[in-house]
Image (cartoon, rainbow, N blue to C red; front, side):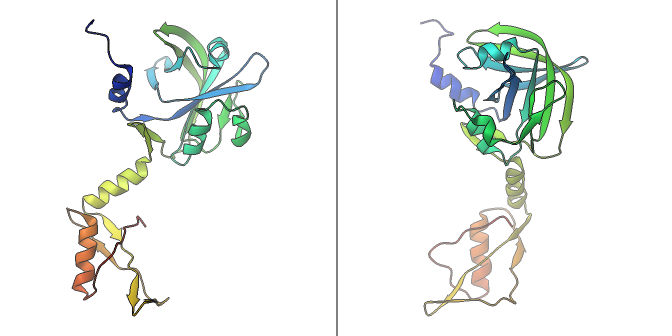
Length: 228
């Protein structure tokens, strides 16, 4: 067997170790109808001239329309738009009906509430194996300041949530909420405030348990930490 013949599934999983942003690439077909697909194979290429690149599978339903388009757009999804990514990764006929979008300066569909968008003129289409690389020259763009949606190891992640988790693990402030029970009844007082503490290293759940035990409370069954 040749050295460069690999198990496609294993290769795909290895490539998935690289965290990427999630985008939806959009354009208009010859009848001026919107077309689009989810892609994470996106990268910047050059600042002068302003070029970027996205890869499209030759088996994609919209391959002919996308590669023939004079303009296309990249919508970098924000971390709350996982549902948009899933919709445009499936062969649904009414995908655009479920998204708030408008035409860009050159007519490409631009989504609302994205982290950033770029509208491009087609600079080049380069065939590469079972994909084509669409190189676009940026003609218009906008950045909202929202965090982008991440993807790695076959799953989505939100960078802001990951950052807060890392901050907590490094000693950030964690809000802890405890449910108190006595003789089978829940205790509560609307005047009580939520206890807060500085978490050190180690397991935050164990830290919470030790804090409650120091107050003379018995911790049992289960409890969870919520990022407040």
